Image 1: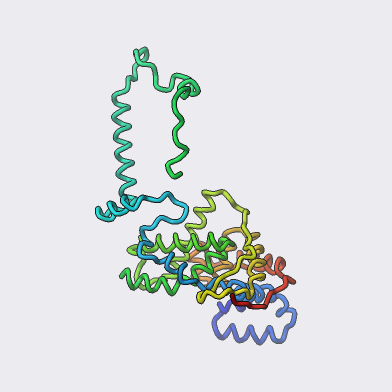
Image 2 (image 1 turned 90 degrees about the horizontal axis):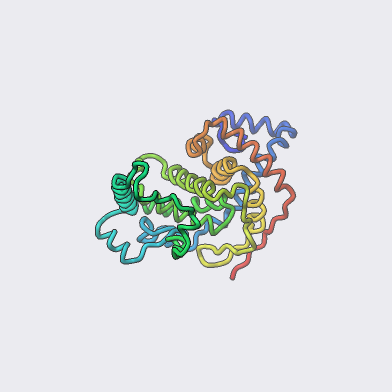
Length: 143
Length: 171
């Protein structure tokens, strides 16, 4: 296999070539390797021709910040604000996460924890009862 | 740095696209993968070390993105074979040569495990050396060779006798 892939040192490569020329069985054993070398390259050759519009899509001016195809898209205004602030999405996400964590800690600190407290526990009611009458939230932020 | 990096990336894109098609087996997914790989590379250009191979670095990015995608979708084994869709060339002409063969090859590739498919794409299709393939895939050279041998035998068994279309047409 290394011979077919040209991965042998030159001297071994040439001696191997001579050996294969002498031995038809050996040549036959290499057929699978040759096949997958030559046929696959030919088969995938058309994919090397990249149309211009695809090239522009891959390397457009905003390629670095453009959201890939299937992700939620930021509004142009949000993108311009982020650009102005020179902040990446990851930084904004981290800041938002930290703020949420802080808010959660504050809520936990203020919530009563002793047994027999006059306030019922937030999740003591059955889920179905709590949800009754509560308008359904949207399915997802990405939609 | 970025302009030079970008121009080097332009030269690499055709090979990257071929690698992505071999990995995904689907042109649309491959183009999405290339786009995401370029975006990731441009956003992390500082991580690339001057003097190292850009193609290996970008192949690794593409491979990791694809593996992450596959993990998240849990679509192992699922494959969308290349349909009769035409592949437009850079000049806008439709290239039909080897198209049937590409569909057959993609179907055969889809039967391979992901780790073998990556190695076939790197070594057999792109001509990357075993050592580079081992670095990109993050496995020893011996593993590269054993996986490649298995994959090639399986591909050969699947594809032997497949008819080839050798007619080209332009639109």
